[in-house]
Image 1 (tube, protein in one colour):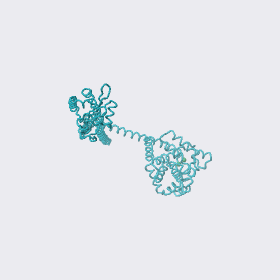
Image 2 (image 1 turned 120 degrees about the vertical axis):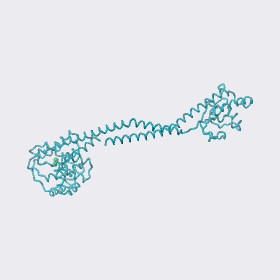
Image 3 (image 1 turned 180 degrees about the vertical axis):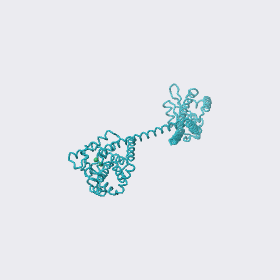
Image 4 (image 1 turned 45 degrees about the vertical axis):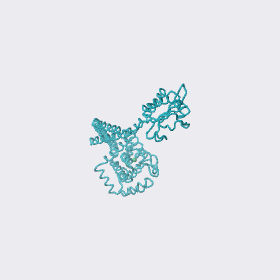
Length: 445
Ligand SMILES: [Fe+2]
Ligand SMILES: [Fe+2]
């Protein structure tokens, strides 16, 4: 069982990890190439500016107007420009004077001689003496010579002589094309899958062994908790036995009230934690009577006020007994409030109505009823129906009316069946289960 669970856990872990890695690779494959491309373009822009500035300083350090005036100089310069066009893989080359007049264009010759006062990038380069670089799409350019070249790097570089800007050169250079590199993505994904298969082959056995070992510890821990629960229950049982040995006539009362409380609690639909508290509390409700003197506890006649006070003190004594034992804390609710009354005339705190916890309201009915149908030192047992009449008489004053109504539906045969069930199987398994549930909730919280 543990092995199969470990197998499933190992498979699930590696399968999910593989998916996460593949998704991660997919994201990386889609996001990294544009970033790299952007970096390359930036480098390309810097390189374009650099080669243009080098060309200007080496081959073009004269006034651009000179090109218009001297045919021989023009031919020599054009020769240099042609070489530069090829070397620099340029798409266009323009030469501007300081007042933004075009004196040379490799392609757009029809514009030569015209002045362009609205070319902002040209004016920026002329005014600042700094190189201006921009990436633009050839489709957006007005010039027919530049179309169908994809992305273009446009560079304006000033021509500076003796510290003065005497003109500018404008070039267009085709930028490297962006491709998603499908083969690279496929390669990355393939490497990821192969690495994962290797990782699975190398680590799955170890992972599985570790999981199996952990599950083994978990089982041992669960067993230890179960043993602890049994030990706790033995402690409770010893406390109850100690009480019943002193008070023989109430023997079996603790077990019957547990069974009856469950019977009523389940029909009332209270929550499982409330039911578990009710079970443990019912079992221990009068544990404080250990501290009440025998002379009072076994007194057949009526009690004096002082004696009655001593009897009432069993609530506080019960809380004192369970106080130091943390796992018995859930029983405190019933112990503390089981003598409260619906109309507020009960003890110890005089709570009323729904201010009394539901477990204690249920228990109050069950406790009184079982006491009535049992022999006590001061009176004989009452018949089943007569006892129910007494309970009905307490409806709305001693007891919660809804719980009384529910209790009235309990038949004598059901009550007898509960008693015979206790006689056959005892109640220890039920209390044991409630203790285990309460413990697991304490540990889980
Ligand atoms: Fe009591
Ligand atoms: Fe009782």
